Amino acid sequence: MPESRATTTQQAEVQLKELVHETAKDAHDFSGAIRDMATGATPDAVIPLLLIAVAQLSVTGARLGAIQDVVPAERFEADSGPETDLDGLRVSLANAFQGIDDFTDLVDPVTSMEISRGALSDDLAGIVGALEHGLAHYEHGRLTEAMWWWQFSYLSEWGVRASAVLRVLQTILGHLRMDADEETVAEAEFDALHP
Image (cartoon, rainbow, N blue to C red; front, side, top):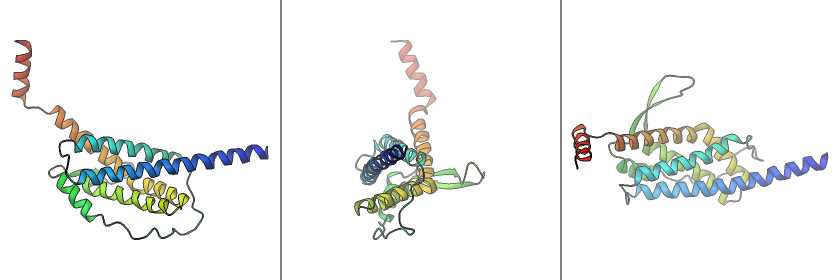
């Protein structure tokens, strides 16, 4: 019996180590993608690409939320170095999303019906900041600390913000694809029926 418990514990440690490496890769990829999109190099593709990136990150977050709480060995968080200045990223994203950046959101859909203002640029910059904070721990070899941070920040902030961003992006994409001028639709129907 004790041997079986040891094997189970070892397997759990291996799985957690694999998850930390996968999460680090996903965090790095997401952060890079958002920074690339903020340059404005691909304005016509930013909404669909962002939809994919946020959806993929949401899967990463779901894994963090589904596992047991990660508890770091130290009681206090180790210094991960200077925080990344996200103001430039936030401004660049606000410029990229000009006209569609702001949205209405609920503070907490379970406990409150209070409405708040959200902004894609604020939420995305905040998510990048949280992910990069965890990456700093990861890059310093503090794997458990990185996992703890990603899990904690997912449950406390960026998971909810990613869900809000995903919903807004789906709504925007739906409007872009489904909303059409009635006259244009009528002409297309006429042309299709009378070749």
